[in-house]
Length: 293
Ligand code: DX5
Ligand code: ZN
Image 1 (cartoon, rainbow, N blue to C red):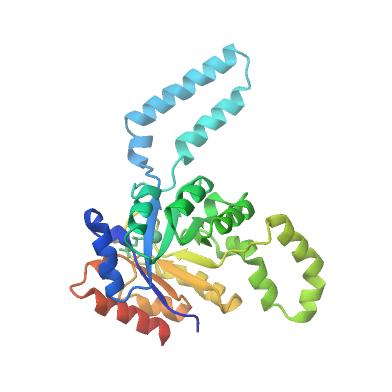
Image 2 (cartoon, rainbow, N blue to C red; image 1 turned 45 degrees about the vertical axis):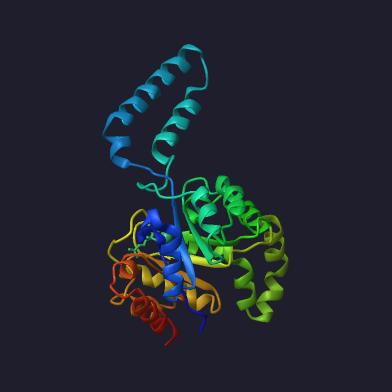
């Protein structure tokens, strides 16, 4: 099988002692350190409380103003609805490039960054400079610009990955894995598809992603319950791409790891199960054993 990578999620660590927590995880046998970068959307405050009303007023003012000024009010209205509804990706705020930069000064470890943000492109340059190793963005916010995004991630020396939320169908990431797909096709089909695929790859930047992160909880918080139904996606992906890195994230621990490992996941993110255990090293080795079996 594909090599196991156990990645404790530092979201469950003591942020005030990040460097020592990171070292503790490495000493416990961690391969990677999973870093959750979020952009802080708060649904309650945005839709129900004061900021929503302010946003709503702004919307009405803009609407009236644009009518008075005979501007294209549709555009303004749309822009504000977009800002209100889609400005942020998850209802939590965690860490950003400055923290990655600080941590990098204390460790050579592979920093597996998971970008739960609506504008991953804006994070490429700062995270590259900060010393991130992996850059996993969400397909839900990158449908239109993944080619450019992947190219830029690689040009900054990071390894690109794509993630999808529990409700997003696995087919959405297939276009980002074009080259892997090509190598899995039998030769006859390769010849038939070559002109088409090669052309597409050139258009898209000829840079497929190297890892798929299948979210096994709704992104946003640690300590949630593993969703077994997401395993169908892992199975489908593994069948199609035998050597791809497939990562799972959310609710993984001794009681759920076998489901993920048997479905074909090889990169395992685990936060609360590792940090909450009296013996983190034992949990890490248990996770590894399940993947390597
Ligand atoms: C959730 C994050 C996860 C989280 C996992 O949005 O992406 O990395 O920290 O934590 P556990 O393992 O506790 O579910
Ligand atoms: Zn994560």
